[in-house]
Image (cartoon, rainbow, N blue to C red; front, side, top):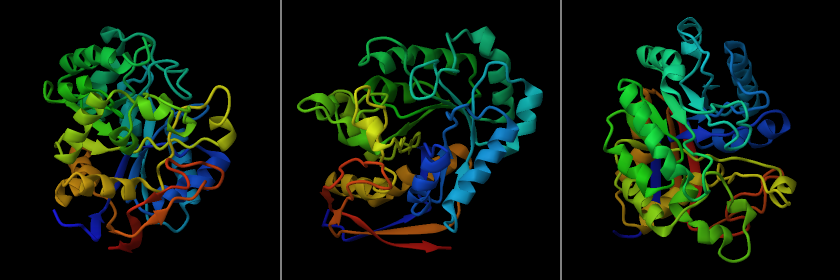
Length: 342
């Protein structure tokens, strides 16, 4: 394929985004709102977003933080087994999904699920299934760090079998085992990050430790990255882009006890453009990966927004309002030339 000098993306969507709250929210929200039509917003604040009132209030804070940018925050609830049908019916119109975290497995997930007893989860999951509310899952066990996601696949299988009409999103998958599960169950879908398409554990810890590449789930082996690349570059209809862009202040990353999270929001589309072009993938596949698949899976009608990227070198800043991005101070091949609104 000849060198692509300009790429136009229609209504790009980020299907897994951390915006935090307070000062951090105001510092980084516009980085996503500028170039994405919308994003699925994670609920793991402190305390977590777990009521209708909290969803509505958090959405209002997000809209204040994005200012004049045209952007839809697709809100989520923090899953609790005690959610009943009456509550879910009352909150359905305010959310796009519910996010389930295994207890203590990642940032601010201490209030998550301990154990996956199907009968304990059945009332909430059956109600979600009936109401058409997708379930997003951070799929890791507490096992050895490189095996946690692969071990969790058996739980995905159990849930997919027990609730065949429940749309289950395997979030930020990183392994070939998760990729293989996509085609075994009709109701399993997945998000994939740009950083997991680009790095392996060797990039994180093979030489000097790279704290700004440390995340959960941790980057895996080359064969895992190849499996992710295959389904992303071919625009497998059950996968969609979710950045898992997770900002932390510099002092929390460059410290003993490094916080988990990679910040990619301001450069995600540029990196994806370069990745698809360098792998000779059709640009319609990039469009499907960053928007079309998500619209179909979630039933979304996003805001009209065109993002025009140009093959011009872009020097990534060393930080954005105190948050260090992936590839800080490095140069990449694509820049955002213009954003147009419909």
